[in-house]
Length: 251
Image (cartoon, rainbow, N blue to C red; front, side, top):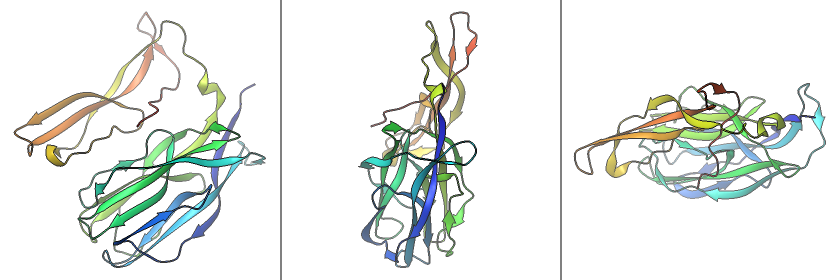
């Protein structure tokens, strides 16, 4: 019999004010995840984070008796805050911490983790980009009742714009069945990245996509773009095979 459930925010809490420019590390308490953030003014202004415990619910919204863990915490490399580089948590990971030092030209790191229910990894699905928020405008961003934060991007100084990536956590055992014998995985829909300065570039494929091409012009300060693609499964006749394809174990 198939099993399907989702993990959603339960009790939400808010931190005290943090002065981010001093390099203060925010880390969600044990077995909680990041669900919101608020910032006011420039790099010396105050920041608060919202974080939440988690619960498992079925398709009718009934709470399921499950042990939920937020585990395997890892820190990302440093990203220059003002460069407009999108940080997206690796496959099936969620954001549980952040550190920033200095002004908009300072460096930001993110902590990510895996969510498990009764020992099983719960996949992140349905990743969406939020509308942009003026960073300094004292506006709370919080996820809805089903979503948590899995990515963030900021462009420019404190008057620049910030947006987030959010995802649902859904476990569906029917999506874990192996593909039929003779199945091939091939590129499906191809897209092109924004133009990057090669000497400062940091490109990560969007979730469940792979690199299929690259273009570069000039020296190390020249422009670079990447082509990336979603994937689909086909059989030996070239017919599409239905199923869920993920790109996992990103290190």
